[in-house]
Length: 80
Image (cartoon, rainbow, N blue to C red; front, top):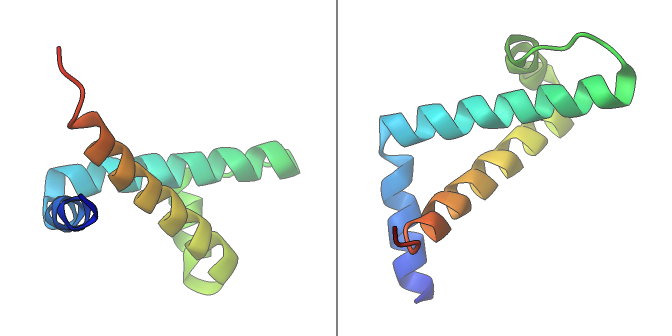
């Protein structure tokens, strides 16, 4: 089961539609976290720029991306 999950998630990483969606959501969530903590008007575009120099923000975005990919895998088991 573990290998199946890894294989599925790897295929998601090669799917532009999935990665665009998951990345957009990760950037939005990170911006929301920053706004909540600082009271600033940080946007997802600002997070993209902050990621260049701030490794903590880059790590947070990547954590959200990985969580989103796991969520996609889990959603594949749900039936209508």
